[in-house]
Image (tube, rainbow, N blue to C red; front, side, top):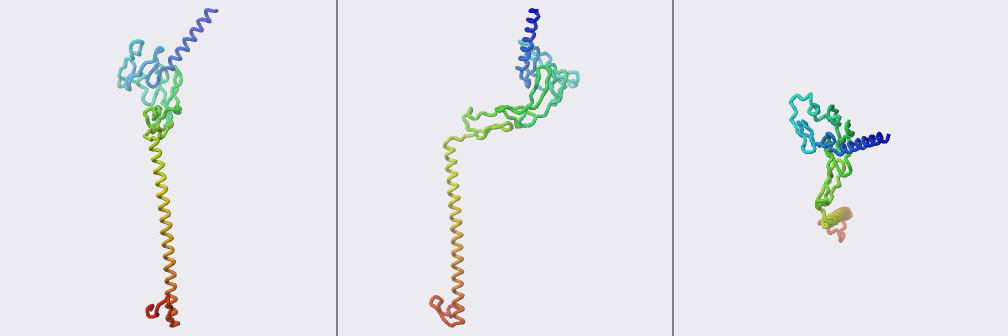
Length: 227
């Protein structure tokens, strides 16, 4: 019984290790074969001979009619359903801010999941990429970035910040001066119009008194001069 338990433990450990090896493969650019992570072949090619400890995969171009070779028949809208790629399944279409994730170690399924906090994706059906680290390049962060947009970097030192404050204050003072001048012009026009109205009223009274009363007043002048 002890030997059987020992063998079961060894099998369990071996199975767990094989799972760990499968998870470590980067499924976007690699595939698993016999517990190894082999680099995937370029588009239009398939691994004729998988990689081993000393050699990478031997790739070969897919034939024109490749219905017998599943690795070639899985087109751009299809993905392998298992490690041997013996069956193809439809590729989900991911939105901006999402990327395609693969679940499973031997039998695969694919879902769209949001980009991680430090990554973004600004195009549909694409993969998330790292958000730019502005400080790493000695730049200021103008926009920190999010799941759908990359960060925007630029030059913004303390002197630039002070210059922006001074420019804002100058603009505010200039606007205030313009408002004061506009109010003064309006007041001057109103006073001029009022004085003109008073003068016209006085002249009218002088004319009436000169014509009908035959009198002149010091501030009116002679009736002949007015008429």
